[in-house]
Image 1: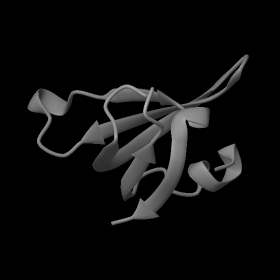
Image 2: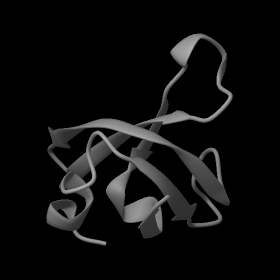
Image 3: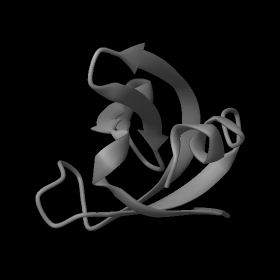
Length: 70
């Protein structure tokens, strides 16, 4: 996944397949609420389905194996 591919899905409901060493994996379904440019690449913010009080998961883009609209 490239940062450009990920940015196209901001604001949408998605399912992320994550690498085994990623926090929150192996899959996360929820609302991709935003991204942030960092010195070492893109940081992705996802609000997982069923998370209490809009809690967000932060994932660095290189941990994302695939992203599918859901």
